[in-house]
Length: 157
Image 1: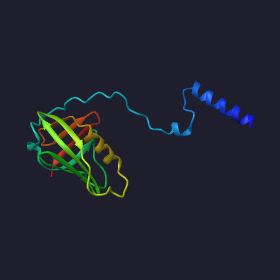
Image 2: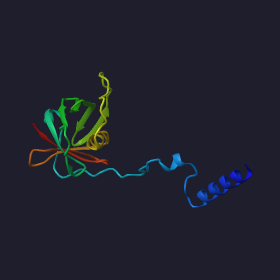
Image 3: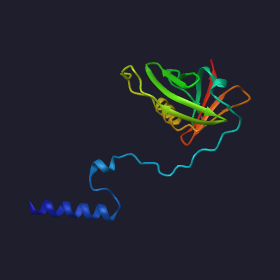
Image 4: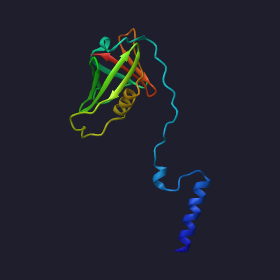
């Protein structure tokens, strides 16, 4: 018994000295991003308010990559809210857009969550929407929402 205690102490001391966590649970933790700078406003014309972007949109890109998943992510932009869908996954945000500055606040959903796991793109989309700070229109007709978590590119449907 004493040998096991001594071995446990040696492992704990060496792990601490090497900068490694003592417990296996702590080593499985995901890294935390700290101090990310806010994104700059992307190129394009600042959206004056949400009235100019009301309508049905399809998400074409997230974080600089074209979307490629079995379920299209779409968004309905209303004057003060955004509702988004990907098969049975749903999101809702209160939307405030003024002179290209954007604030999206997640809103609760009335229906139960989707039974399937979310795809990586759905997770990236939600994160980017939650952190969106800017809204611009580009010459190709796309709407770009951008923030620290990246850009979301939307096209009208």
